[in-house]
Length: 70
Image 1 (cartoon, one colour):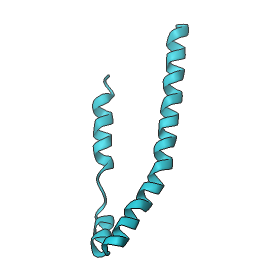
Image 2: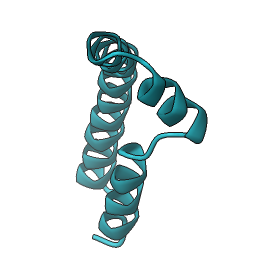
Image 3: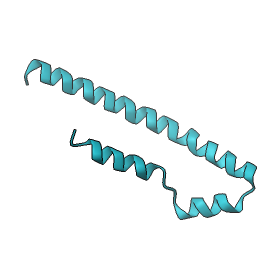
Image 4: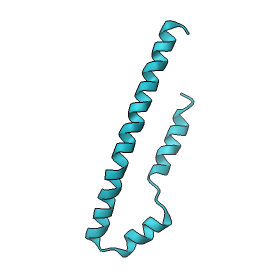
């Protein structure tokens, strides 16, 4: 439970964007800005899946370690 506040703070930072990305998106037409947003999602999805898989494996290993008592 101690990690929950840290996880929430990390999620909040995930919604931020750098100034260069903001300026670039702001100067584009609406269609190009939407394409840029979709591209960001395409790049972020594999990272999120990988992080989730690693987290799941770590959780299962921790549960197995606790179960065996060592």
